[in-house]
Length: 106
Image 1 (cartoon, helix red, strand yellow):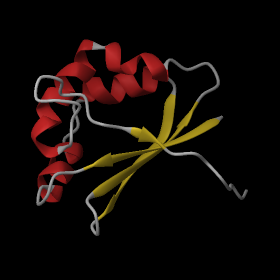
Image 2 (cartoon, rainbow, N blue to C red):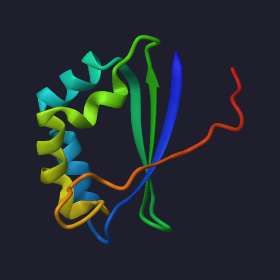
Image 3 (tube, rainbow, N blue to C red):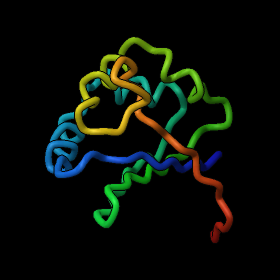
Image 4 (cartoon, one colour):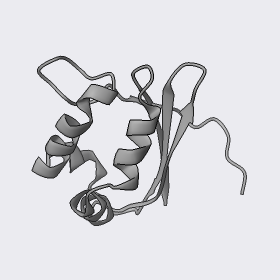
């Protein structure tokens, strides 16, 4: 199992809408994540600076790095674009920074 964590930035004042959209996450998104080998996926919100922290676990044989190439993920990014800091006005991909694990306790 591979553990990964990422940081994204939520725009000011949209946490309720962000939660609502994730409460109603499209079944195709869930299927794409599962098919890519993503398990145990959580997103946390830090209200002090509108940071979202994603934590996920990956199966050894995963295709996680190819998820953003899927049409359904591109549509999801457009759907979420007004809520997140994105690469540009023309590119709905959220700005994502991978975090480096420095400690893990079992």
